[in-house]
Amino acid sequence: MSPEVLPDATGRIAVSASAERVYELVSDPGALAGCAEEYSGYRWLGGATSAGVGARFRGTNKRGLRRWNTVSTITDAVPGKRFAFEVSSFGIPVSRWQYDLEPDGDGCVVVESTWDRRPAWFRSPSSLVTGVWQRADHNRANIETTLRRLKSAAER
Image 1 (spheres, rainbow, N blue to C red):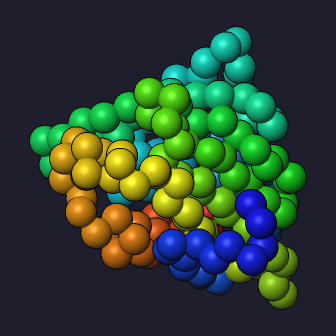
Image 2 (tube, rainbow, N blue to C red; image 1 turned 60 degrees about the vertical axis):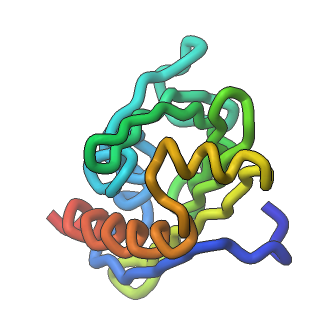
Image 3 (cartoon, helix red, strand yellow; image 1 turned 180 degrees about the horizontal axis):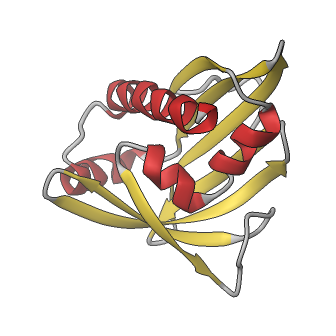
């Protein structure tokens, strides 16, 4: 992602665990699903069995009674530093999610960011499916929840 393009939603939290430990959690789609608010599960695609650049997984998502699937492609996998993936639906770009980790004393700081990648014509149909019309605001709240849960999991 180009550094001059600011994320649509972002959050940060200090964690009393190493950047390597936090990376293990954010780069494991199952562990990440346990921390996330909407993202609830995954299945590796194309023979992938672990998180590496180019690996893909089908994500399951839920919000109340609403359910939808996406396909994510891992774009960045630098242990202890950055994990990121691009999300699509029916081959249409949806978003980018990125976790940046910086050592900080005995722990690290985690920055979670997302960029809305949906074409304008796809925003209304996707909002109907998810029930979310103000996606940036919703993602800011979800990021806060995810980061609190991630902190708790990493510090256990």
